[in-house]
Image 1 (cartoon, rainbow, N blue to C red):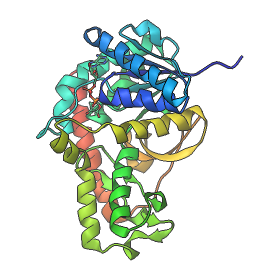
Image 2: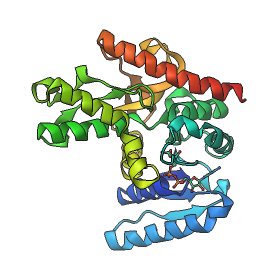
Image 3: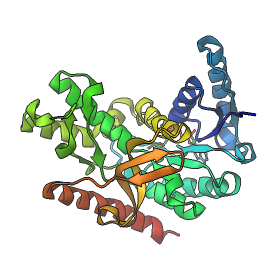
Image 4: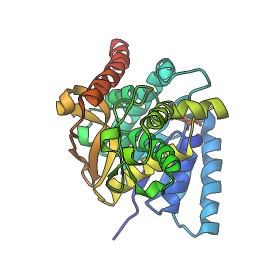
Length: 313
Ligand code: APR
């Protein structure tokens, strides 16, 4: 008998709600929206609203709110947004002190109730939180990833498409490294359907686009007073969909490196094939010396936050 996949969303806030809407709308499975006890009714209300939305839009996914981890037993996919988002003036790294105990709480419960799930962490500071999640759960490296690169590449794509006057669908690009202001948009692999982007946009404009991409999250925090949620949720759903449907999409994800690109025991963003086994392959791009240097700097920033996390165990 075919059964629906079980999708657990840990954190029923802004990203959690949008994730639930997208998962249900695509009928990728039944959705549990989990939040802490103080937010249980909020999670239940949001779930009910979203389930009623299905009666308008025509999807049949069940959506439930809960504050009970037992409801997540045997989940196939978990997406973790538990934590506090940024406020204007804060960097992602400023969130370590608040979000570290939260990610540990989530990981300890996930280890008990859904140890075999494919897990996508979104909570910030992303690369350190996903590292800590994997460490606590002891999960295999192919089953735990962080969502950053799909979002950062989408921002880069949008700015390029608008400047070049072409569709977002025809931009091919990737962003490597940590999900911080020194992330590495990779110009040498950026094309408009195979044509180098430098044929469309002058270098000074490209430099400005790279700078805007790096600060893309902060730009929205400054405007809204909290962090983005539509594009982050879509990015995580693209990753989950590739896993659930074994699509084998090549997506930039924060994945555990074990020597690739010269880094070990570190999560940073690199292109990977996501299929039914999770991270099935990490792709190593040929980078220019300049790009290698930028990646080294970005990896060092991630390592510094991971070191803070390690010290507080
Ligand atoms: N377990 C589960 N949920 C938790 C826990 C916990 N231990 N602690 C807090 N939460 C919940 C909060 O109650 C809140 O409902 O996480 C939810 C976070 O939702 P929002 O505050 O709306 O934040 P959101 O915009 O969804 O971002 C969440 O993703 O992009 C990152 O920087 C962002 O770290 C932040 C996270």
